[in-house]
Length: 343
Ligand SMILES: Cc1cc2nc3c(=O)[nH]c(=O)nc-3n(C[C@H](O)[C@H](O)[C@H](O)COP(=O)(O)O)c2cc1C
Image (cartoon, rainbow, N blue to C red; front, top):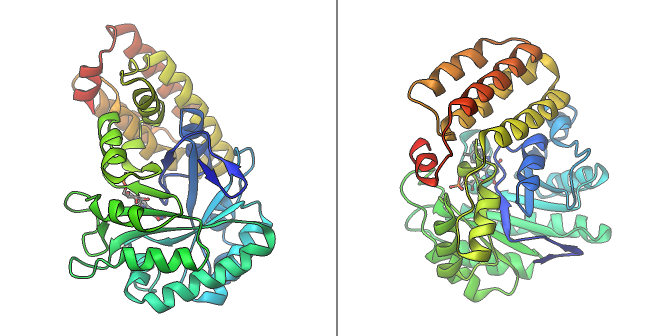
């Protein structure tokens, strides 16, 4: 798939998830089969751009191209400045967030709240495209199907965004009103795909190779984007890629292989956050990993309590490597069924 000057290795994308898809996790997902990753949202507010959180998010050292950065905000000139700010720091693609339902974003009329004001939404798109064009940086847009059940205006916005110069659209198959409740629907994505010429990415509740194939078939989308199902299971991308290419399931990874990925993830994580924050913010990832592994009853809870009690890098690493060694010495050959059961 082509996006501006970039040829993406495949059509499997990691969804931007604030607090989850930081640079270490994106790198791991790309290594395990994701063809594209968008960074967590970066604020357009200049007063926050020097905060530690924002500067960590805007640091792309060692990440494979293309570097795609998502921006969020409500003010067109400020969003244009945010695009330029990120381009100066290495962004090669700018993604506009009109998909996030979080209150913190919506109260400020950003994220998916922008879908309620189409004129403002398109003025933001135009300003960001104008800021990116001189740098040859493509602008993409991520949105939901609409504001609420009665206002599913994603198709209207999609056409307007395409006319304004957006080069790719991602659609999460829920309205803003739904938050994460109910089941994502992909018919709106199929409808949008039939009306625009730019690539369309389907997102929402894709959590298995079969589901990925079905969403691609039903929508005709150019790519799919996986969010929550990749938490603690970044190898889902190579599993989906293998299934799409062969129709066969890839055998589940051996626990020793998982141990290797997990330790690499942790080292990268500590490098970015330092010891104090890194040890604490790694806990959620470790909890998700334990949840997705085929462990004996009670093992995941015990593991979580041990890693949560660790307050140094050494202690957390030791706990992780010893646990993985112990589980893999007890494990019979993992089958796809016991992995599914564990998840
Ligand atoms: C913890 C979390 C944080 C998220 N942060 C963002 C974000 O910063 N920007 C965005 O566009 N979407 C964000 N999303 C939405 C996801 O990108 C995605 O659209 C949604 O989770 C549906 O996909 P899934 O069913 O595969 O998880 C977030 C979702 C979660 C669960």
